[in-house]
Image (cartoon, rainbow, N blue to C red):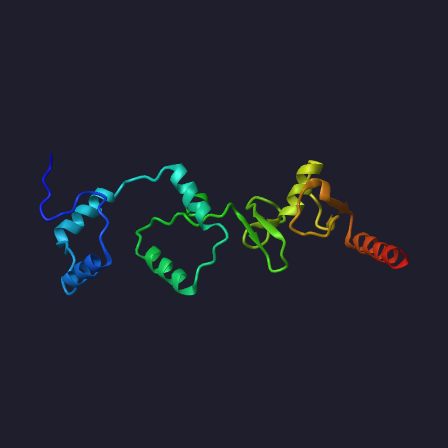
Amino acid sequence: MEMRYNMPPKGYIFTEESRRKMSEAKKGRPGPKHTEETKRKMSETRRGRFISEETKQKIRNSHIGKKLSMEHKRKISERQKGRKGIQLKGFDNYNWKGGKIFNEDGYILELSPEHPYKNGRGYVREHRLVMENKLGRLLTEEEVVHHINRNIKDNRPENLMLFTNNAEHISFHEKQKKMVNYV
């Protein structure tokens, strides 16, 4: 059995007074300082360790929907600059959110770098991809995908309707307005 001198038994709960005294006793005392040699050894032992896919996925999921402050983004940027040639991109990056983003109009964009109608950053509107999968072909640039329930985030195939051009789409909306006014 290991002897621990001047230590309370495991699970002992300190009183507020005891905690205050311990805190006072620690004040002014520097924490453990590592020598440069020790720091180097610790760094070498960490080098080459791999994070499991399960852990990577947990980290990714914890970042979904969180917004970073400008200060935090700056710190991440500074940290990344110090890395030598290792820049994790896409799925391997800890901040990966599944390749989906929202544009300024509120539409969901999906990363599709090989798509012929991608934007400058390689994204395509998700409802267009869903309609293409439903039809089994690429949409033309003139074709317009309409959300039946008018919720632009609802990209279920049964909620999408295809028009051959924007004039047909606008005509459809005009007819709907007239129906609502006369009812």
